[in-house]
Image 1: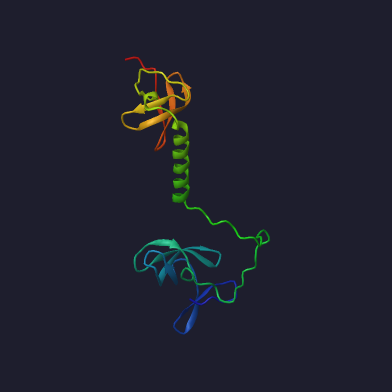
Image 2 (image 1 turned 135 degrees about the horizontal axis):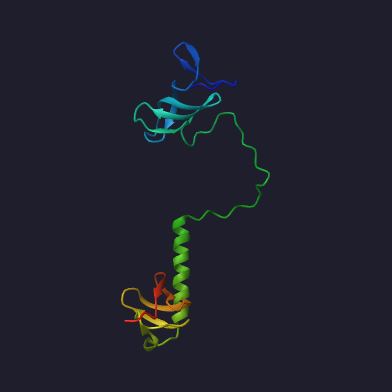
Length: 172
């Protein structure tokens, strides 16, 4: 595909140029095949193709005039007005944020049970009632500390792995 400076996009087909239109064909980067292939135009915005269908695999995706990582020739990107000369802190991935949150939970749990005797842990029972700061031993979740009493029938307990809302004060 050849992009001309005029408003209309033209595509070369052999010896002559033709105007792009919906239903026509254009070369585009296929995101599924990961190759620069022939595509059918399925949506246009003005004179530019927006959505295309790969003639090889049949997938529909946005039109991409060039493969990822290839810059448009002759274009110089001006620095944005809000960009500062200071370096930006690196982005934190979701996995990193989740790991940091888990570490913070574990540290809060360890701080809450630090210096407490093993005998201070009460076995968790539905019929028992708990107050904030009580130590609880649950058969499935392990040792925990009551962070807050939500209401007369619910408590939030911080276990080593995560906080859980459990029932309390239920009659047998």
